[in-house]
Image 1 (cartoon, rainbow, N blue to C red):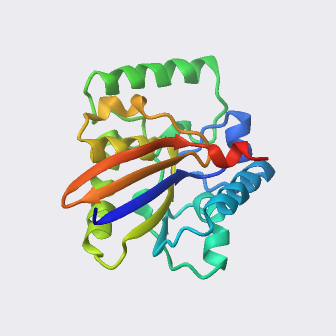
Image 2: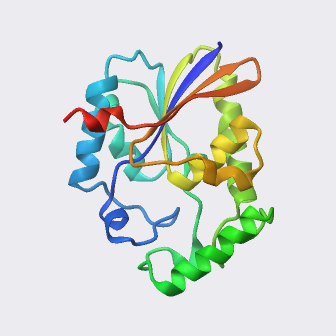
Length: 205
């Protein structure tokens, strides 16, 4: 094993709670629940000797791992880890109309149309292109053996498809909760998912 990645989704935001669509264009803060989730994750994993923490450019990911940053862990933020952009739907309340539109888009993606996207938004292929950039950055840094990554639900699902060699239509095979943990090892050029959506840290209170 050359590297191990701990990859988590950011903590809860008020928009998550209210059913408002976020995406790449909405830079929301964690709410109290999200901060508690982040603190619980830190409490359980603070002694893991991470070499670096990577976040997206959106503050909800930074806030989720802020305790690691405050403790002096080297940190970089990369827009390649940002959430998929939902375009015209960002900032809107979930509704029957929205549910229908997302169902139609989901069917396109599951049918293999990875270029499909909402107006002003991104397709799975768009996100995969930028995720491949950050994958190569992480792979190239041989001195970073143990890495913590905080990112977003949809982008995380697509990243796991890339890691596992599955088609992007398999994104729905990867559940994710706020601060749910995926562990991934890298040996040579082979990524292996060793833990999925682990939320043990949320069950200790």
